[in-house]
Image (cartoon, rainbow, N blue to C red; front, side, top):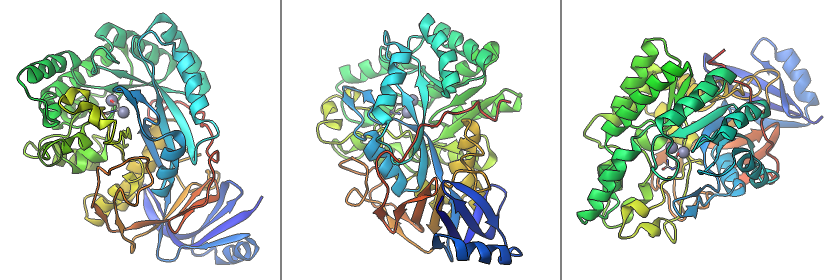
Amino acid sequence: MPTTLITGGTVVSTTGRAAADVLIDGETVVAVLQPGSELLGADLASGADTVIDATGKYLFPGGIDAHTHMEMPFGGSFASDTFETGTRAAAFGGTTTIIDFVTQYPDQNVLDQYHLWHEKAAGNCAIDYGFHQILSDVQDSSLTAMDELVAEGVTSFKLFMAYKGVFLSDDGQIFRAFQKGAENGALMMMHAENGSVIDVLVQQALAAGHTDPLYHGLTRPWQMEEEATHRAIMIANVAGAPLYFVHVSAKQAVEQIAAARDRGQNVFGETCPQYLYLNLEDQLGAPGFEGAKWVASPPLRSKHEGHLEAMWQALRSNDLQLVSTDHCPFCMKDQKELGLGNFAKIPNGIGTVEHRVDLLYQAVATGRISLERFVEITSTTPARMFGLYGRKGVIQPGADADIVVYDPAGHTTISAATHHMNLDYSAWEGFEIDGAVATVLSRGKVIVDGGQYLGRKGDGVFLKRGLSQYLV
Ligand code: URP
Ligand code: ZN
Ligand code: ZN
C-alpha cells in the first residue's frame, strides 16, 4: 500500500490540539507522531511514498455533513446537485462524508426507494456516503423495512410534522415508527413544524394577496416549531424512543430540547449555517423575488427575536450537538422561479454543502466557538451520533485517512462565480472566511489540493453505519 506522511501540522481533536505528523498506509491512519517520536517519524518520512508539508496548518478530521438531499424530488423539481456534483463540491469544502436522505412519498415502498438511492449514488460520489431513510405514511411494510434497513447500516429515520399532503405523518404514524425505533435501536429524526396550522396560514396569506417570498417565513411562525418540538418529545417519551431534531431554527424549540435533556430524555438536535448567520428580514425579505434564494423550512428567523444568538449559545452549551447543512439546492432559473407570484410554490431548500466547514471555521476565527468545539460539531459528533465513529470523525490509528489540511492564514470569499455546487446563485454570496481549505484526503487519497480537484467520481463508497453511540 502506498504510504503518505503529513508533516508539520497541528492535529485538532475534540479534546485538544498537538503538533504531530500523521502517517497513512493506504486508506488508513497508522500513526500520529507527536514530538518525542522524531526518530520514528524520521524513519517513516524517509520511507513514505508521498510527503505533504502542513507547516502552519491545522489537520482536521474530514467534515461529516449528516443532512443532505442530493437529487431530491421535491416541490415540483429535483434538487439541482446530483450525487456527483454535490459530493465533489463537498470535497472542495473539506467535507469527506455525507449522509443523504432517501425519500419515501405516500404509497411508495420504502425498500424500493432505498434501492433507488443506491442506484443514484453508486459509482458517482467523490466522498463516502451513508443514508438516512425518510418515512411518510408509515405503512406496515415500512415498519418491517426499518428492521431490514438497520441491518443494512441505515440506522436513522426521518419523519415530518410539516409539508401537509406531501411528507407529513400524523401523530399515530409517528408514534408507531418511534415504537419501532425504540425496539430496534435506530435513531428517530424529526422535522418539527406544525404542518396543519401552517397550511391554513399559507392559504390565508395567499387569499389576502401576499405572494412574496417573505410570506414563506411569516406563515411558519416559531410557535409552530416550538409546539411540534414539544409534541414530538412527548410522543418519543411515551414510545421510549431516542429523538434527534433536524434543522432547529427557533430559540423556543431549543428550549424544549434543552428541557427534555435536563429531564434525562435522549433528545438531540442539529442546527444549520443558515439559522446561525441569515435572517428573515435581510434575506427572505430581500426586494422582489430575491428572497426566494433563502426559502427553506423551517424558515430563516427574525433577527429581532434572539433566535440566531440562541443557536450559537446552544452550540456552545451542547443543547445542540452538531451542525449539518440541510443541503437542498434549487436554481433560481426554472426552479425557484416556479414560485413567482406564489411563495408556496417555491421549492424549499438552500445549498451549503461546500461551505459548512468554512462557515463554522469563521466562528472560530471570530471567537464564537473554540477550535476543538468546531471539530466536535463538524466531524466527531456527527460520526458518533450516526454510527461512524472510529472509522470517521477522528485522526487516530485505525481511522480512515479522511483529513482536511486547513490554512488559518488563508482566505476564502464565497461566490457563485467560484463555487462548485450545481447552483446558479449562492445563498452565501460575498461571505468572507478567515481561513481556507488547502488539501483534502479521502481514505488516504488526495482529492483536493490548492483548489484543484484530483479525485474521480466513484471514489466514494457506501458506509454501512452502526447504531448511534449516544444511545448505547
Ligand atoms: O427546506 C428544506 N429544508 N428542504 C429540504 C427538506 C427538509 O425539510 O429537510
Ligand atoms: Zn426537514
Ligand atoms: Zn432536509
